[in-house]
Amino acid sequence: MITRRTALASLAAMTASTAHADTWPSRPIRMVVPFAAGAGIFDIMARLTSPPLTEALGQQVIVDNRPGGGGNVGVETVAHATPDGYTLLVGGPAMTVAPLLYARPGFDPLKDFAPIGTMSASALMLVVHPALPVKSVAELVAYARANPGKLNYGSGGIGSTPFLATELLKSLAGFDAVHVPYKGGAPALADLIGGQISFMVENVPGTLPYVKDGKLRALAVSTAHRSPLVPDLPTMQEAGVKGYEVVGWSGLLAPARTPADIVTRLSADLAKVLSSADVKAQMTKLGAEPGTDDPQRFTAFLQSEADRWGKIIRDKGIKPE
Image (cartoon, rainbow, N blue to C red; front, top):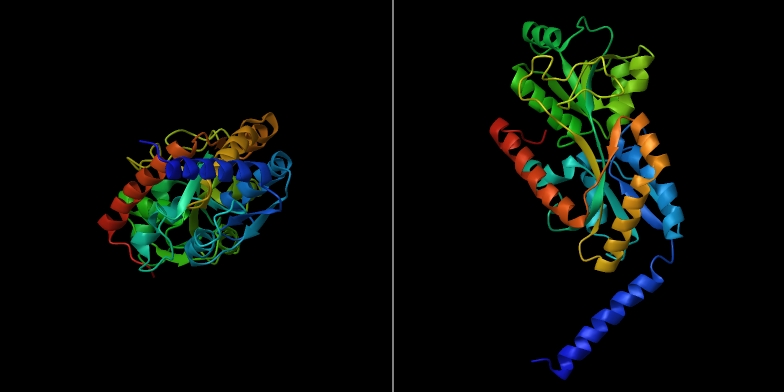
């Protein structure tokens, strides 16, 4: 039975939703990247999509880099932001495993966010410093086994995609190396180029320029299929690491309880931006594919990522350093 109170409540909800749609956005929107500015795929995707989103939304979308804590600082910033559509997050695999790696990460990845849509999917690349006497994955594994404790690798922090990808490689290939955490992929790459660390598994867009310049040596890509950017480079599986597959992804999220009409508007505008010929062409040059998940599919994907990496973390007994 529909009472007068129920009818009034429904009318109020409809009016509020319409108000959101009519007035939002009325000021600049902040797109938080939880890693340092530079080579990371999250920063690349934020800077690639923010100009066309600015045009589509009629308000400036400002990229705000908030590195620290393996990405937790930036993610927590958005988790506790006012859910009004003016603070967004460019997230990735790290946020889905934070509760398994940190006693108090400051957020729940499956409860504190309203997924908007995936932004990209791309391969990662195993790269080494040219001074390291290895030219293949098999040679790297053999060298690591013959020189225990000598090799180290960098990443944007515990729980970051490169960290998880490298730990999976170590586990499947049967070797060890010391982890050196950084506040993002860019400073880690800088130290790799400088010879302070031995190798990394990092995104193709960020590492390829250095490979072409001869500052790094590429050994393999992480995906099940070869990257069109480096078609001559084998996959990890082709290089002998059976069962290895890691896809780097990024996605756009808002704080939980952000009005549904705002999430719907952002999802639709993001999809249009990612399907535009210009953005698709730029992503192809970066070796990335546009994301296609809407809020519902993205929500299910986040759960599957948490389950997948959670099993690896528990099986390996990975703990924060």
